[in-house]
Image (cartoon, rainbow, N blue to C red; front, side, top):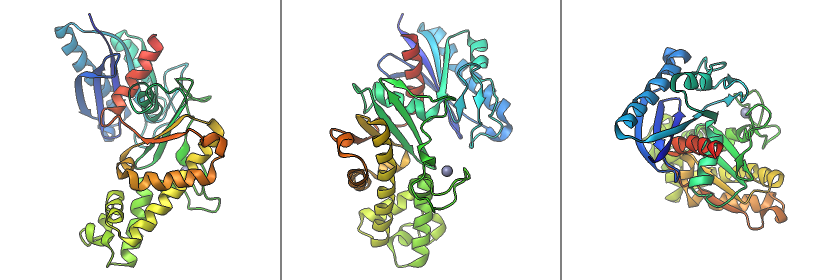
Length: 322
Ligand SMILES: [Zn+2]
């Protein structure tokens, strides 16, 4: 009987669940809305019911599930399996006994960690970082998350809270961040920050392509609009992309100096900008990182697409079950 891991990805909008084999391929998959507005208890029961749906299909097809892996926003206490610190996109998630609840329901070994940390492990085992052991992986979307893999294993830190790269300081007197600090990387290089800069630029110059591509409504400017305008040669958009890439490169250079990774993988929605952004990021890293540390360093885009969360969660369980 072929063995599988049940991989679960808890997002702010959806819960994704799938059976993942040793090579990172997904067999059966289910999706259910997170329904965070109905409270953390409902979110937990939605996770259990989605997992149950997959497992009931498995019984009829005679596959063997050997463990469960789950990625969640926030951090997971590795002693108790409970959520520590909470998650900004799921109100009330702090303290939820995530791992004990899954273990009790399915009587399977269950492993959990932060979703972006597991995304990094997924890219390392099954994606762009295959064959590498020391990797830093950034997920750039609404915010900036990251995962660190050292010697092929995820680096969790003392409380599973490592790799908060989005909240590293890149400008001492910079903009205030929702975390309470100032000048955080995600205030300058997240999709949210890019859209904010795009809106400002399009209000200043309504003749700009950013304004046109947003349908003549500054409120509808997104990061994607800014990148599209830059690709078509719009000056204001190019300036924004230049600034974003430069900040991002500086943030990555700090990681390169501290961790000396073999590879930096950039994933998440902003990674879709591709070469136009990557080119500037690389230049910035050349400026700010030590030459000895960036020699041989590869900067690349993530390979895992929409299934990255499920595959990453399963990667942890495969590794733990070895
Ligand atoms: Zn911050």
